[in-house]
Amino acid sequence: MIPEKNSCLVSIIIPVYNAERYIAETVQSCLNQLYTNFELVIVNDGSTDGSEAEILNFNDSRIKYFRIENSGSCEARNFGISKALGQLFQFLDHDDVLDANKLSRQVNKYQEFGDDYIYSAEMGTVSNTGRTKGRGYELYEKNFTPIEYFETLFNQFGKCMTTGAWLVPEKLLKSTHGWDKRAGLNDDGEYFMRIIVNSSGIVFCKAALFFFRRDVPNSLSKQFGTKDVYVKWLYSYKSYVKHFIDAFEYSKAKELGWKALSVYYCASYPKYPDLLRECRSEMKKLGYNKPCAHGGDVFVKTSKVIGIMLTLKLWYLRGKAKFF
Image (cartoon, rainbow, N blue to C red; front, side):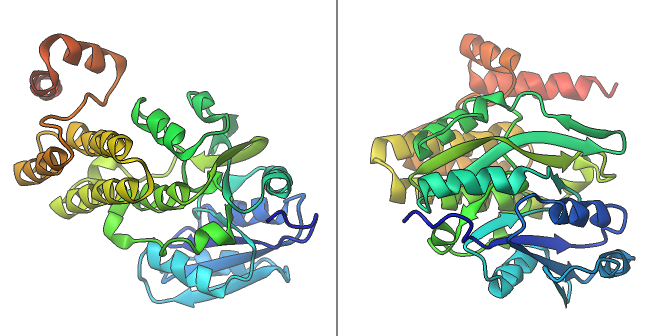
């Protein structure tokens, strides 16, 4: 179905937790949108800092503000969905920002292609020094079928579309269940994977800019400090496998599922051998005995010469040697 022009309410959903340093800029970037038919659903996920005061400084009838007990960003987003009235959904993290043209460019494409597609944007970064167009995301700046998108995602290293880049029609949002906290740090990848496999494809919207923040004081080493994080991370990629098999031709689904599991294996090796064994067991169900190489160019080239398992061991020892 192609909607009539200018009829679409966009629901922007922002979960907020202890974001007093950034939330005002994030909210203002939404209020600055040239496309004005939107509601801004802000869900305060039990913040203990001054986030609420920053939010209440704004006086705009399009803002819907809710405060809930701390439940995590997935539950906060799901709560936001339950309160939203839009035909299109923009999810945004509490420290990221939208360019003023972001929604207008994407809604224009939506008017053209309709609600069987999900809409992507150009990616950039924001920090205390300003906003910059991102490098390395050019490979995503085109239209994709779902299979083409996942082939691109798994055949490169270190770059992916993140939460705020997407605009999701209500039809696709309702085609799957909500945000899944069991996916942990990959909750956004797992959620949008489910949306994408249920879509007819991805429509790229040129000059629709989204900026994710790079100067947040939250180290990756701290985020990956417990086994539970890895359990959830593996869960997310097992979810990819399930939904690929449900959506795609079986041989292609198995190949993509293997590549998804390989992302986990290569990135987590050698931590938690029991989880690595579980990951390889899932690969064997798909007909693959070992992971494929997922890493930088040198890593991939080395694996072609000496094999993936020896390359993983070598990279681990090389990284360990840096600390001596």
